Image 1 (spheres, helix red, strand yellow):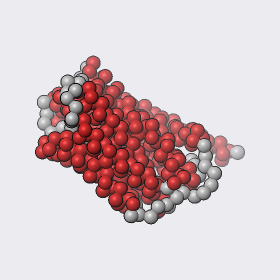
Image 2 (cartoon, helix red, strand yellow):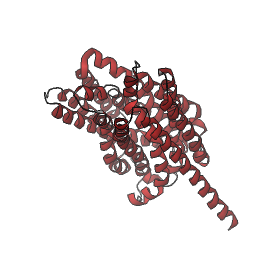
Image 3 (cartoon, helix red, strand yellow):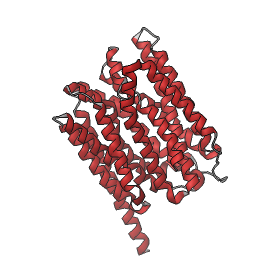
Image 4 (cartoon, helix red, strand yellow):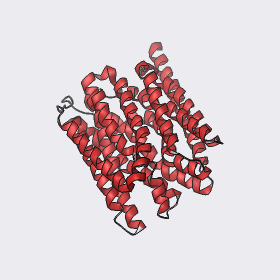
Length: 384
């Protein structure tokens, strides 16, 4: 389980490295906050496009291939990051950087989904909640470490050193995965993607609404700090990741499918409170605390709903189900940057956090509705 989570940690270290650097780079080139948000969110465009391909590929060919291909994409993203600096035209440099972000998004979806399914296949479906939780701990611990590390690398060697680090991570990940034995899913008739999507959709909708908060924090918290005249905006990103890891460590082992919706509802309420605190922040300390509370609440929503999603499909279609479920995360992250940028451009850098808090409240309403529907169906079965 820890080995498979380690692949995810490496991939998301690569994701975290540019987060606190690229928005400022875009502003330095003369672009506005919408473009800065798009640059952060661009990787999720590739992730969205890739998710529906990754799951069936894992079901057919096994997860090791997905991990290796994902790390090759990470290496390609590092090469593109360095190549973008060779263009004097801001538009051309931005286009090449966006291409690198798309490669990184493809690598993220390949590695994270494949590693999660690889772990579940090794430890068994009854332990799926633990694998999902540890995969998430690896994700956000790596992001929390990657954000300040990316700032340090950028200060010491610019984007050249940052790109070299991304390339090195890709090469190391490939080397680690290739020495492990390949595994394939059970041979059986698999559910059509449309059937899997229909079963996953209501849980994915709640997850997407919760993810808007994560997308706004990662895309705009550093710009929010800069606009307020506060130093060290990366601390909010690290606080978000720290709150996430603490939440997973405390609650991962207690999750069961029958309590998943109740847990998701509680943590959505916590996330909404953290985003509201960020919006109301009058000091950097308040903002860091708001980011930590947001991460603490967001942490358990994916596993709480994920343990239910896995039970909606047979074992031979779990890769497709997890990939489809994760697609809702990517779609939300893809939309969060540009939408928050448009809100910020028309008002200020605080208002996007209020909008994200509202999304979390709507997600809470969705999970309450799913719980009510589930109780009604259970009562009908008992009556029958």
